[in-house]
Image 1 (spheres, rainbow, N blue to C red):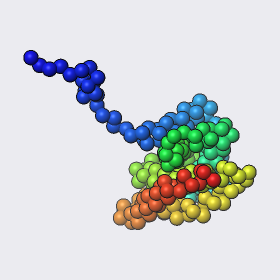
Image 2 (spheres, rainbow, N blue to C red):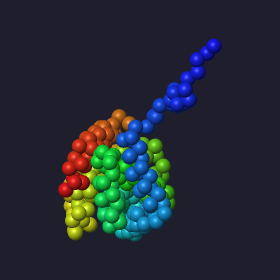
Image 3 (cartoon, rainbow, N blue to C red):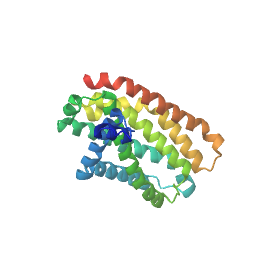
Image 4 (tube, one colour):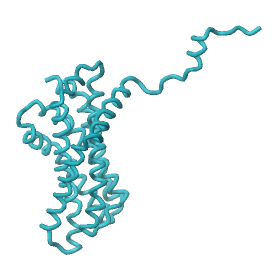
Length: 243
């Protein structure tokens, strides 16, 4: 006669182990909060998108150039647009947390501070990618340039990731100040100069039809920048947010 296990032991054996650690659940909770709040209000995405479209429209009318010259300046105009729109998004993202009192609630939650950082950074990354997905087809029509290049998409992902990991850390640092709208660009842009230099060079290479070997050095620089500053944000965010 077979021995039967008690019901609670049987359930414990049959239940699969959790594949998601509490740390990643905390990251996902912060990300889901930001996404759900933004998709209800659409304040942040609307501001970033309108600002980005205004920038490319101004450049379109200012640069009365021939088709060849326009194609040469495409990568620079694109990254100027992403930089300005991304800075606006980073500022508004953290200031809304501060104004609504959500920042204090996040600090009171019993989770690792770095989980808050990664959740906020991923949210800003998603918002930047959405804006870029809107800008690309409009830019392609206005400038008569085909931007749907796999290499360019890769550069945009790597560049946007590096931008938000630095920007999220610095926007957390400046959100407590009254001059945060001016202070964030002053702190952010000098730090991300290597990122934008590599992104513009790599984008120009892919749009110009260069071989992958010729742009590999810039791709490697983007990857190195992302890894280094993700680690810096992971280590320093706890001290920055407590100040």
